[in-house]
Image (cartoon, rainbow, N blue to C red; front, side, top):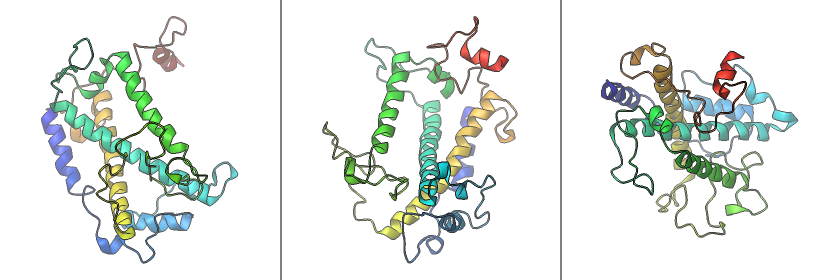
Length: 269
């Protein structure tokens, strides 16, 4: 069942978003990686999906968050989508890989093995030691913190913040890190350092579409497990999950409220 579900998602997705966008729809004469206004968002939306185009039912594109400029708002929105797409792609691939593959080496210093393949990915997370979960969260948190302290004043990589005229989605290098880091997060082997602006824009369009599809994919997996029948295409393919998707530390640091866990108390309210 699990094999059928994952093979279906790979084959269905490969025909749509996981492919190169036509160059005629992507490459423009100015090839600017920065879109600062709502009009630029509308132009970008047509390149991402000519059929749907610009879709913003909540009007976020012109909302000017906290009374700030269009540059601030659009930079925030674009960076948020790129970042969430990247996280979703990692989650989708991770879900597929850990459904079929188990690292053969020990997971902890005391020799404990990685979770069994008999468990679904969310269940594998639940049985991880609290220290392992904490290491993952702290590492991701450090990457987030490092990217946010970049500014136009010459901090890491002298990269402008995406809300202050910088390029949404661009991650700073580790060159200014006090502790030497041999590889950068993006392009660790400098294979794309001479890439043209046109190619960068084309690849970013592809990345955005892939990220959007991955968001649907990982949410589909979790929804199908947590609420059987909610994703008809996955009916009977995934085992139900009895845990709490939105409580990653349940059982580790539950807050007791009136004799109930934090999750139980939230449901009662």
